[in-house]
Length: 146
Image 1 (spheres, rainbow, N blue to C red):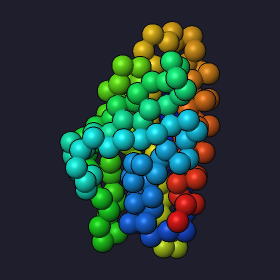
Image 2 (cartoon, helix red, strand yellow; image 1 turned 60 degrees about the horizontal axis):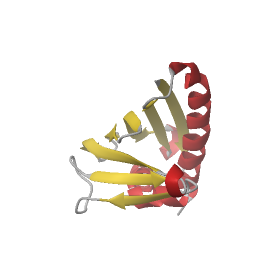
Image 3 (cartoon, rainbow, N blue to C red; image 1 turned 90 degrees about the horizontal axis):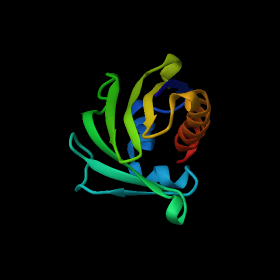
């Protein structure tokens, strides 16, 4: 199991940063070899379920997630979304927080606990490095996309 934290300050209003990070199908455009399917009717709410399918052919796996906390930012109040990862391969949770930052900017905090079933803890340092790289790059790209 690995636990990592990503923090970014961006020149976006709270609602814009929030929207860029929580529009689930957009994640497929920034994570290679991944497609995202939302299984519940919009808009996103507690109970929304979606699946990120990553990989190629027999090496692909589903990362099934459910939104368990959904509090969009309002009137300068931070927003918080918690996802529970409930796939056969990927387990854990992720929290996305968007709060007011300095100078009218937004502060993004992405905190995640990630487990890969059947992967021995010996590989945790490698998994942690790969997760920070992949998720860090994805967060950066999502926040830059207009």
